[in-house]
Amino acid sequence: MVAVVSVILMVALLFFGARTIMNRFNEPVRAEFISQERIDDSTGRLWIDVTRKHPDTPAYCIVTAVDYSHAEVGRREVILPAGAEEHSRIAVDLPVRAPLVSGRIYGCSENLPFYMDPESSFYAAR
Image (cartoon, rainbow, N blue to C red; front, top):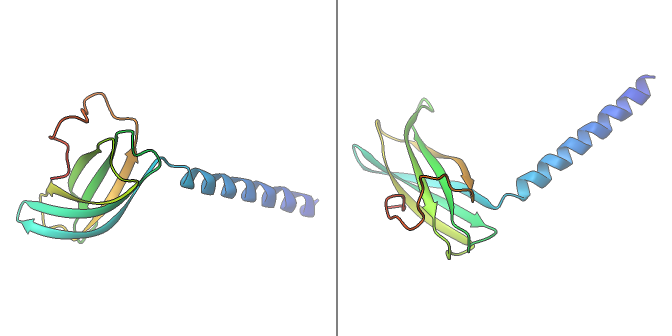
């Protein structure tokens, strides 16, 4: 009986592990934090590498700046316009409330919210 339960648990673990890995590699837009720099007391710059499966489709990413205690001190939505390269490194300037020491990628998507206009320069990585 114990052997049967163990086999069932192992099969379930393998199934969910494989499913998680497949979902991870099936993302249409992925970003990776590379580095940060301080521009001035109220502005920081994050460098991110973006990989897109469909560069002809507009997308966006949300990036955050964090301090030494890992508290979020800045956040920015960055539109990735259609027609970009499949792999690109982007500098994102964002306002910060305190000195930043690192950055994070909150997430990326090809499903732009209704308020984001890919033609507007407001969301561009400045």
